[in-house]
Length: 329
View 1 (cartoon, rainbow, N blue to C red):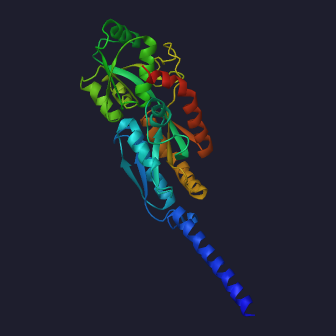
View 2 (view 1 turned 120 degrees about the horizontal axis):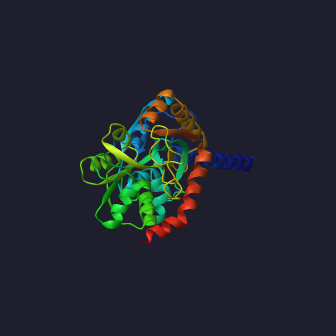
View 3 (view 1 turned 60 degrees about the horizontal axis):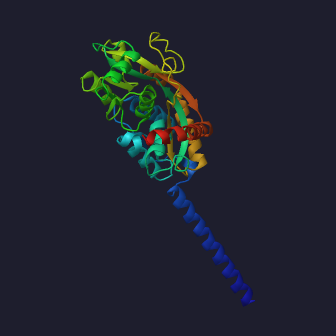
């Protein structure tokens, strides 16, 4: 009888310790919080570019709208630098508890890993939440410059190699890489002067520090008559700028990749991901967000976690060969 009691006690102890271990494991994985109750504290959104640009403005708008859905504030932190790599790295190293999300664009995820060593892997280190827009990018010069067309600018660059300068939001950003591919195809040398985000890149050309700029932040200045748009990165001409040719029209058959979205570190629980997607989807569909996109000349595009992940992976693979060739130059 005592032996039976002793055996029963041993089994109970084993079961009890097993339950304690499992409970500890769940606490470790989810920071001691039940995913069903997420969120119970503020969320941080890391914006990987500097304040004032389209990524920053759209990220802040979505954070404000989504916070009302989630019932917790979403605090925006700008971690710019390295063409977006610094902020991207910060997201990849964050705890996968849903309390850190980030803005994501093509430069640091699709382009940069093929060109230099980065401390993250696009296909392994992130949980993709949604795509919320695509970007309209313009190549522009000052309105008082002598170049009336993109062909004029290329002709000047060909006549005076290394004389002209252009700015983008940063080194190895999608804008920088795209224009380097264009200049390579045109067989000209134009110096790159990186800004810290699209706003600073635009100020560089407005202040006469560069002759041209390639970013979305130029658009209000084009409309105000301070800058002249020579080319636009779209599949078709923009309705508001019918006289500005696309790069495709000009003969540059380079696939445009211009998506903007949100993601988090790998390993976010599926229940938390569902809540984040639901909140940011409502924010993305809010009329005020669409109004902001119109102001910034962005096109609202919604992709869910599965389709957005597939899009990022497809673009990553499609550009691998071309970008590695670019990196050798």
